[in-house]
Image (tube, rainbow, N blue to C red; front, side, top):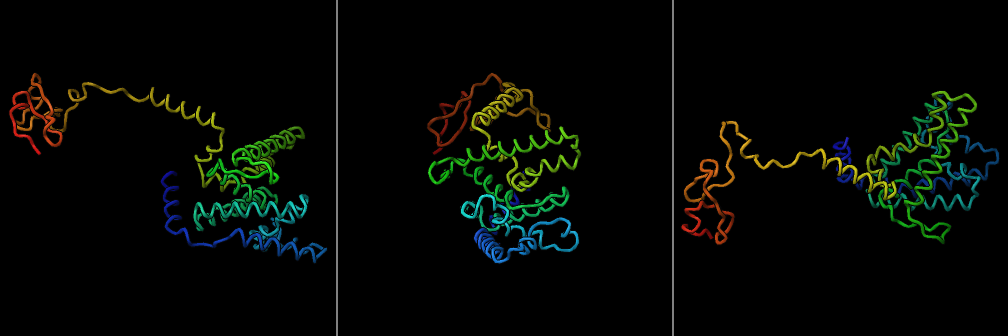
Amino acid sequence: MKNLRRSFARFCYRNQNKGIPNLMLYLAIGNLIVYFFSLADPSGSVYELLRFNGTKILHGQVWRLFSYVFTYLQDTTGLGLFLGLISMLCYYFMGKMLERQWGVLRFNLYYLTGVVLMDIAALLIGCSATTTYLNASLFLAIATIMPDARFLLFYIIPVKAKYLAWVDILLTAWGIVTSLLRCIGLGILTFRMTLFCLFPLLAVANYFLFFGKEAANLLPDFLRYRKTQTQKNFRAKAAPGPNPNWAGNYRSASGTRPYRHKCTVCGRTDTEYPNLEFRYCSRCKGYYCYCQDHINNHEHIQ
């Protein structure tokens, strides 16, 4: 898996300028156009035509697999138009940051993978797909790559991206746990309902697919440090210690033991003459070894 991820990274690097540049800009413009068309259509037919609907998709309306990415402002009407525009602007800048960091192609594939995986999860579970989780995957990617990047909370309070990611993860985990407990209390915890409760995790599967073990960068520093130290201690205990007699215990394929020292003049080795002393000459240019008979009786190599 690691080799596959490296090959994918090299492929994206070699083709980083291919794809759709400024993808988030086009998505933002598309959302504004759909929103204004919806204002002119009180019946809501425009929104109804574009939103995700699994039943209608299975009946041939396949454009809904992608068109729902233009319904973000309608899906967030509870926030109000102003906050919806602000959040969409934030996600636009996040997309630009990822595009500069990764290149056009890798960011396009990241977003497209999120759309496809969310479509699959929503169709299997029977729920509706929204861009809320797609945008959450952008934020998680930013917090993983640049955990110390600062965001202005309410345009006043500077907060690091990793802290906001922790809050987002805790709220998501709380929602999943409460949903599962509610299903258990009602006695309706089936396999499908379990998947429905876990949909927030399934919807950001592109994040886990692209980052893998790097997702651990979101962990608090003390947890990451503790894990690293535990791994180091385990490896130190598991690793065999040095064997001072490795030359004596090892034999080559021919059955002869290798030597450690060999005289440059006479060719004698410490294996053939274990009682012979060997030294390295400090006046020779390089590492040249000599026996005790030639250490002071040889021509210096320059």
